[in-house]
Every structure is written in structure tokens, then in C-alpha cells.
Image (tube, rainbow, N blue to C red; front, top):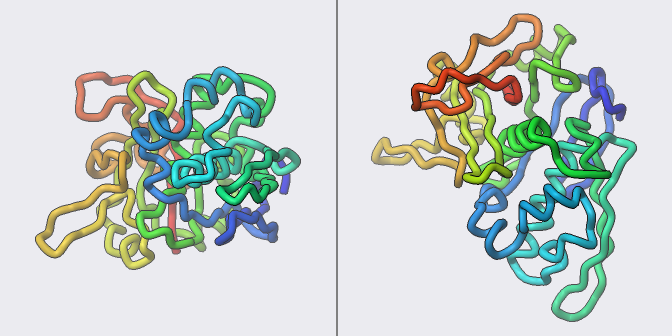
Length: 266
């Protein structure tokens, strides 16, 4: 896998391993939505400000060595954050001990390379938004691994292979936000034409889980703001992605961001 992932498939497997195969920019998702719960990660497990200020330094992240449930969430969060941010020739390595004092060496490989500089320093504002959007796009309410096409207006998620656009024609929606903002936030919007297809694939974080009483359950802190047609530019025929979305949907703020991850399914 190269830092520019065009022509490469990246899959995060059940145990977090990353496999390489020929193909387009695809990735399996199964990030537990509870790992995005800032009450758990920020207050009880992972200090996001320390992570930002110190970069990916295992010596500054005591939460990832916690042998309890908070440690499990912190490690899962960091594993997926590393897969989003670092390139395939980078990794994040550390060791933690469980309650029985058995040591567990960990090595989390980079995959997408959205912000490889995070390995050596603070995550920039643009990097915060890129990694946040990626993490939201990888979240699965059911913990089920589903292969998706992840797209964006910039490399390495800028899709130029028509074969992938054909194989994954059903754009389910888009994700954006900033987990490192003073008030952490993540947004999602959905493509109304593909909601049934997304739910059939057990992908519900863009449109929400439909309950028997017709109410909608969101994926943890991911705020579903409605159809993408209301908050994002139309999907580009070249990239298969929404070029921009409103930074603050639901307000009068017209500011947009291009740090958006668009996801698609077969």
C-alpha cells in the first residue's frame, strides 16, 4: 500500500489487522460507535488535547495502557485513527499490561495516509477534520465489517478509477466534523435514494437505524443532519464524492469544508 492509495485496497480485519490487495480505495469498517463517545474517551480514557499537542507519542497516552474497558475503547480509537492518518509505511507501536500483568505488544499500521505528519507532531486543524471525517465514516453501529468505498475531493481519497465508481454506485452519504474542537462534533447526511440499500448492508450511521415505531437512532455522537442535498454540494461525477458540506449545518453560517468523507456501497 502506498501513501497515495489509488489502485490499492485496504481492509481492517476483525482483529484490526490490515490486508493488502489489488483494487481501488476501499476499506472495511467496524469502529465501535462507543469509541467515538467523547464522554468515555475524553473524560475517562483518552485525553484528546494531549493527543493533539504531543502527536502520536505512546509515552503521553496513558489511556491506551488502561487494562479496563476504557482502555479497550482508547486502543480501538487510536487503532482506527492511525489507520486513517498514517501512511502504509508507518505504524504506531506500544505495549500495555492487562490486569494479570501480562504484556500485550501492539502495532497499529497506517493505511490511508490522510495526515502522516501526525506521527511526528501535532495534528493540524485540517488534519483534525480529515481524521474525524474518516473515523465517522468507518463507524458501524453493529460492529459489522462492511467493505465500503471511501471518497473525498483530495488525494488520497480522490477517486479517479471509473471501475470503482461502477462497482460502488450507491453513495450512502457523507461525514465530517472535528473531534478535537472545543466542542467535539461529527455530522452525517444521507442520500435518500439509497437509504434502504445502506440499511440492508448494515450501514446506518448516515441515515440512522429505523426503529419499529418509525423513530431513528443515531450512531452515538454522530449527528444526522438530513439529506446531503440540503447541506452539501452535489456528488462530483469525477470523484464520486461531495466536494464540500456546510461546516455548521442547521445554522445561518454559510462556511463550507472540503474535509468530507463520502461513502458508497455496491
